[in-house]
Length: 424
Image (cartoon, rainbow, N blue to C red; front, side):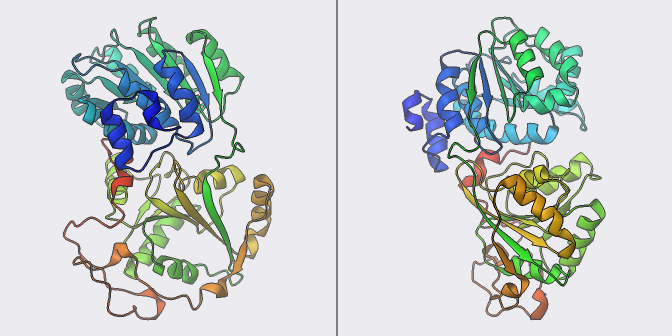
């Protein structure tokens, strides 16, 4: 099956083709025809299965660019996820002459109000801020055709159910409704029974042959000093971005400072950052200006990009669920990726628990395997003129920081387009 069989807009097909996305994932193959036919849908599939395109393509298909009013609304549990979803939808909506507004808290209202006044046909937002705009009458949903609840299990679990109910009450009863999530517990089904009309359930199990293509490696650092191993990993040539996970905010910040003093171009993403600072860091990482991002579990929620080639667990998380969430940041929507986990003797018990949860033992290598690894500057750290460095950096991975005068890194290619909007 290919996307051409769905009868989609030519603009959507061209966008998908330019990104090398030619064949739908299982959730897309099942949900898209149902939504195009007008059915209410409840879609359940694991993280990274392509749920955003599963509702995004029918959403764009059903909007009229000649009608300057809101026709589609996507609700998400967090502002980070709102940004990610908006990025995907923007890449499809703009070629179709549709405009998009993103509504979330932590920032001012004026830019959002202006986007709505200009006649945005598509709105993505968090329940609290969307409800604020409804109450202020800066958002009207009388012409809404499609309502999507994305990550509905998280949204309702976070206590947004009352806000969601109020928002739904402001929409036409004739609307089409779709609910997508990784799980569909009983209370999600209860909400669906109340607000969806004869919904069709689409369930894609994680073991249905569409698991992310992630190559795992566990590095045994029995000395407990993980930094030299991390340095050697960062010296390896890559064609994509690297996301490094630490356990605590202070640990991530301190590790970033150490790497920056050694000359590595890294940024730290942690929970104490303001929304403006977070947006700037994520945008630079997404566009390739920052090749390595260090993050905590909380800070990385909603971080969904196609250009993350590898995830490095510098510190183990506290649960196996968090481990799965971390490594799921790579190998998105049919792409492959790598997950490298560094463990010290104190990490053995947690590593065993993670492997039990995964149902398999992950391949291990000693830290000595990296002791003599060739030191090669990644493509993203070469000189502006594209020529490779003439010699390896001195021992210890120290290198001179290079200014690129705004030149984007090599990883900022077409595969970043679907998530390029940080207009979020």
